[in-house]
Length: 123
Image 1 (tube, rainbow, N blue to C red):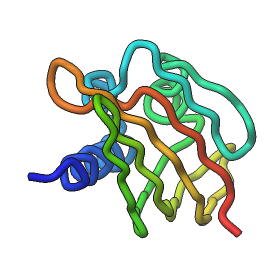
Image 2: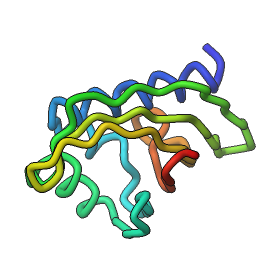
Image 3: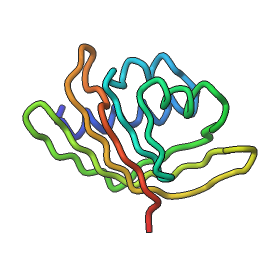
Image 4: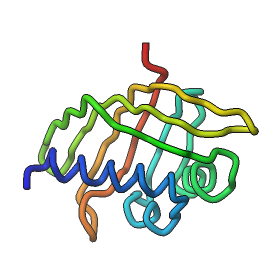
């Protein structure tokens, strides 16, 4: 399996985990030193990401679809760029929007781990 295929699988697992609110699945796939910047410019560490996007109920995902995935494979690192179409509810308001994302992965004890990412509104 190519690195691009492996990263596509990891992104699918991540999308399923946020929809199912499966904190354990996210915990395994996110590196302890994780940093993420969302489309609103807010930064998250691992615990903050899992709480905000999975366990708190602040943001509840109904769907995340990924398209236009490209993966650059560097020694010990994989960088993915893609378009994410998200449907979720935040503060009681439904959101149906498209984002451009960049995610960085490094090898971990159980496969690729997500160590950094940034998302912005597509357009």
